[in-house]
Length: 77
Image (cartoon, rainbow, N blue to C red; front, side):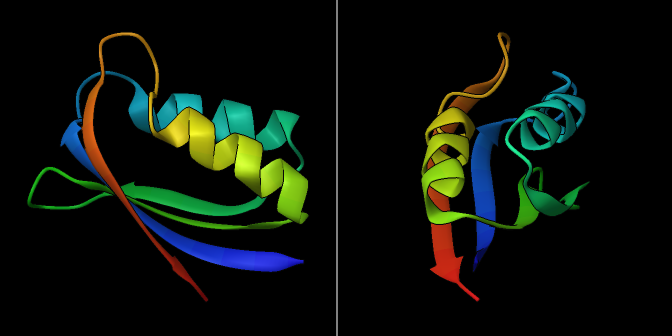
């Protein structure tokens, strides 16, 4: 099991990024939480198997349609 703290920057609020994150994390059996930050970023804590987390992070770099991800910052927790 690995744990990552992920911050997603760009147009990621008001485009169903949080809800889509919950759906994809459930599909990949990843535990954690997601929240909007006051500065417009989305913050995610994700924990799971390494292969599933790799897929999840790749999804975070794109997000749902309507999102315009500029950068994804990742630190291992």
